[in-house]
Picture 1: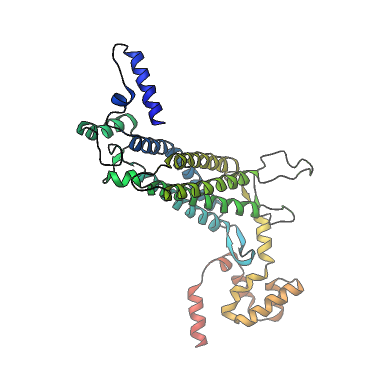
Picture 2: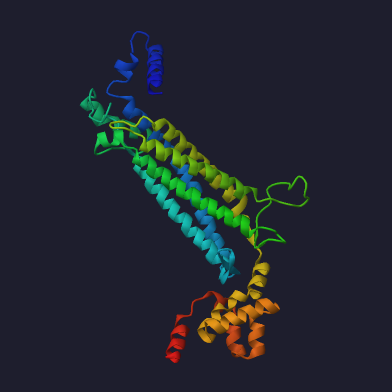
Length: 368
C-alpha cells in the first residue's frame, strides 16, 4: 500500500512538473519506510473517525439520562437470575445504563487519545536510519498543521514500531462498548417481550410492518441490529488480539488486518449507536400501569418485612401468598401481624424502593 502511494505521488508530481524527475523511492519515500508511514496513516484514519463514534455514544448517554429523569417514579419489579427481586424504579434502571455507557465513553476517549502516539521518523525498525534531522523535526509539525490531529512522536520509536499494544487497547475499549451494548439490547428485548405473554414493561417503537405470517407481531429489530454489530466487534477484537500477539522481534507484519478490523468496528459502532438512539431509545416508553400491577402482586415485596418479622416468618408469608394467590398486604391485614399504618408505609413506592437504615438500626437495638 505504501509503495503504491509512493508511485502514485511520483507520477502525479511528474505530470505537474514534467521537467522534474521524481522517483518513488529516492524522492517520495525519502526519510520514510513502510514500517513507520503505514501504522501512522492507520492511526490517523482511526483518529479521524473517532469524533463520530464519541458523538454517537455521547447522544446515547444523554438520552438515557433524560429517560432516567422522566421515569424516576415508575416503580417496577427488580429481577435477579430472571426471578422476581426487590422493587426498583425505571429511573434507577435507566440511570444505571447511563453510568455504564458514560464509563464506555471515557474508556474509548482515553484509548483513542493514545492513538495519537506515532512512530513516524523511525523508518525501518525505529532507529531512524536514512531519515534526515529536518524530516524528523518537521514532519509531525507539518502533519498537524494539515490535519489538526495533534500527533506526537513516541518516546521510544523502536518500541512503537514493533509493539501494537495501543491497537489492542483501543480494540478492547470498543469491545467493552460492544459487550455493554449487546447486554443493553438483550434487556430491551426482554423487557419489551410479549406484549401479552412476556414482560411487556417497555414499549419499543415499531420499525417494521410486522411478521410475514403473524399479523400485528412487531419484532425488536433495532436492538437485534445492535446485537449483531456487537458480535462483529467482539470478533474483530479477537482478530486484533491475535494479530498483535503474532508480531515478531522488530516489526509486526499484521497491522493491515488490525487496521481493517479497527476501522470497521469504529464505523459500525457509530452507525449502530445512531440507529439505536434515533429509532429506539428516544421513542421507547414505560408501561407504568403494568409495572405497578406486577409490583402489587409480587410476593417478593415481602422482603421489606424481614427486619420486622424475621426471615422465617417472611418466607412462610411468601409461600402462602404464592399458594393462595393473595397479595402480601392482604395476608398481613388478615393475620394482624403489623399495624395497617405500618403496612401501608412499607408497601408504598418509597417504602419498597428506598433504603431505611435508621429503622433497621432501631429494630436491631430493640432486639438486643
